[in-house]
Length: 289
Image 1 (cartoon, one colour):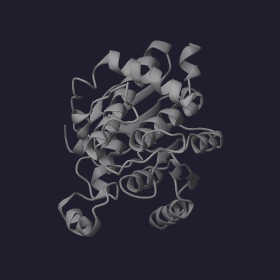
Image 2 (cartoon, rainbow, N blue to C red):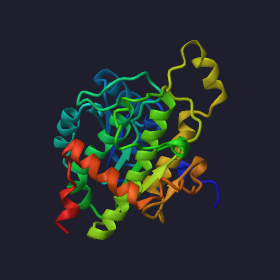
Image 3 (cartoon, rainbow, N blue to C red):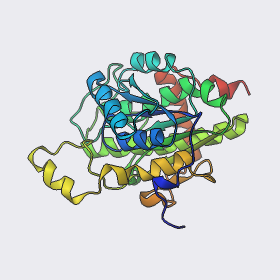
Image 4 (cartoon, rainbow, N blue to C red):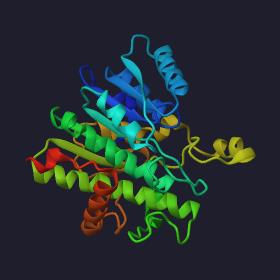
């Protein structure tokens, strides 16, 4: 496959995109390029000031772009519900926001923070937006995971990681959950006859603020690729013709093979049911078809 760049993106006029974590990292160039190519973009961010600044940056780059901020804290299911209730249409959902390798913390709903933010928040958001997505021909959901998913393990008897907490282990588990969700979302959409394409992406080693490295941060950022390059897999999965449901793309939009655990339909189905129970979001659109 020839190298794909955002310049290859089709005209997105008439399409509405929601990008989580659109204020920084790969979320900002993702939102920027979607807006540059004509989409109406809802740039979701946890901090209202940072979200507003992201919108201003996009408008400086693309005067006249249809972009607006959205207040969304994925670590608070009440915030997820409020945000989703304010969305009236969506064709493209990019589940991009994430946190990584933090000390032990809990979400507003009591979940382990990395699983709660990276997976459960996006699971709930996708389910709440599913009726809108299902109403739009050719809708897509792109979920950002990581090659760290290969080290992930899910112990359903200890989802709070009470017995042993490790920053990297918690992150890898959340990224495995992201990939399991993306693949299971496609299976369920297919079974229900819902016109939806769900794909997953790994951005590669990118200079973002997802990991806080203190005084080493400036040095490490020099060794990593810029966020615009990290956004390429997301943009490809969201817009390129021919993307099929259940595909997984890495740096430069190359197809990747998920780990054996990520391909487990049994594990994915169990995670789905547990996620429904924890979030209360039931994806009724699938059940009705």
